[in-house]
Amino acid sequence: MLAELGLNTKEIGVATMVLFAVIDIVGSIPIIIKIKKNAGEISPFKASLVAFSIMISFLFLGESLLGVIGIGTSEFAVAGSFVLFFMALEMILGVEIFKHTTDGKKKTKVASVVPLAFPLIAGAGTMTSIISLRAEFNQVNIFIAIVINMMLVYVVLIMTKKIEKILGEGGIAVLEKVFGIILLAIAIKLFSTNVKLLV
Image: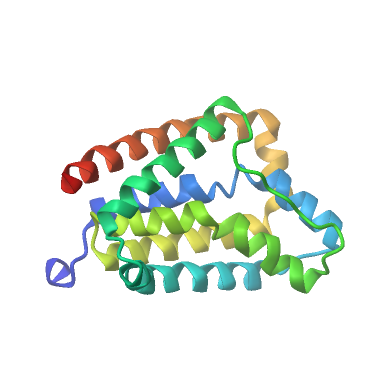
């Protein structure tokens, strides 16, 4: 029955790990705290719902949009592997390659969407990962992985301050390095698998 639906626990597990590493919600806790401080407060539910909507839209419509401009999933996956590669280096080496900006004047309602839901949670890296995963995995497995990640994001947003106290700066830094290495390995696999299809 599960096979008929295309469900695969291995694909779900890998896709969940990829998205978790890319979204890096735990590593983003200091940024989330800063956004909360500037905005006064944020809505975890609204931020999670908006991010979920963006990711699901890109999962089902992203390939069609790429087709309009004549780009296949393999080409996008190869390009995406470079983005993931640099994101991994950013996490491992502690350098800033991608610039993140926040506007301290945003109100709670706006801050929950921009910059929290987009681009912090559902940013370019996340959307690139979704399209890249589509080149190898079944849609339903990626969908489940997105749902799992959004549940985790929601929990983290609610418990931001508690998690920061429990892990401390050192714990968050270690997690970021570990997921950076995982992301680096995934980027290399995405590149090696899909670059062959372009020849």
